[in-house]
Length: 416
Ligand code: C6P
Image (cartoon, rainbow, N blue to C red; front, side, top):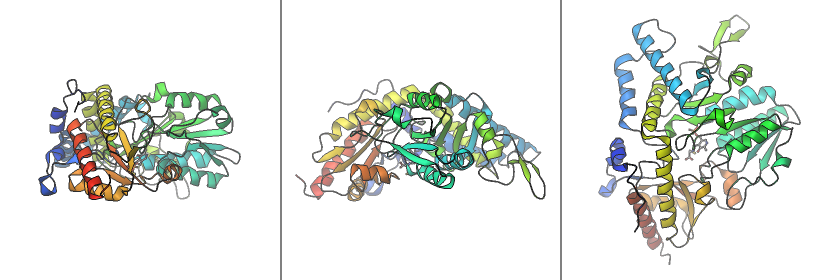
């Protein structure tokens, strides 16, 4: 079997950075982790950074006037600057720490959409969106009398932009779109969409949960108004995420959560707000996680986003070639030139949950279900799919293990 070239990217060295990857599971099977789209594994440096924070300078941020508080605050703000540079944001104050993509998108839906949408306005979405980039808009349009409109999808699972001029009109106040589908892997043309929606005076809100960890993101050159992503998919900890928004938008938006840290002055009956990002960071933020997210960003940058993306595309191409050998298996989504390193599939005669269970017995971890995209599954006319998602720490050998396990599962189900 031909294998993807691994000469430029030393995947074995990278794997040694991830303690979890060397463990063996039941029946002494090596872990084959193909579920990075759900959450990524963490390199040793990220784990160590959290331990360092807790062991040496754990203290609440922006509060204590003591050495520990100063150190922790300095680390937190350094992490914010790392995020700023990582996504090409013009100003550091445009980076809001949240608990993850879901909270970031809800923040826009509450703080911006509920304040500025009115009857007759339209929010444009599409059926490949994760529920986190759909349900908040459903609630926002309900609360404001605006309308939710859908960009249709092509048969191969891309945005159908044929009639885009009829879809993006002066009524379009917001286009909410994922940069990469968590099921189909589809990579959407964000720069082009941003230009089109700006031309009619609207804004673009990008769900970067799946794209930011795997390819270069630049909010400025892409013209992104709002960007949401999660630390745990970016090789960082859980409980931390980011909302980027242009400063003028953050200034205009209402706060989402109210309480400590987000105020300027509080009176008995009213309050005024701190400047962004504090205005959106009520309470004690997940500061240790934020600092470790900064370390995760350092780590991926040390490998290089371009090198990561190239390697993952190469590995994904190999996986798709090998999946094509499994009879009765259908991979969903567009051709490789339009998709990231995700392969969702169905196998005739086997429920994805059974498939996932059988693969798990071989140590192969994939995800099965609707992946929080019920409208997409309705469109695909399936209730659930199996999904293998890849990261730069996966190997062609692991793809082979996936294929062997799939062939084994077919035998269990006596499929010919
Ligand atoms: N997708 C998956 O297995 P949170 O849970 O807030 O970190 O991310 C939500 C989210 C938003 N958008 C996209 C495109 C996503 O893929 C996800 C999370 C996981 O596909 C869990 S459902």
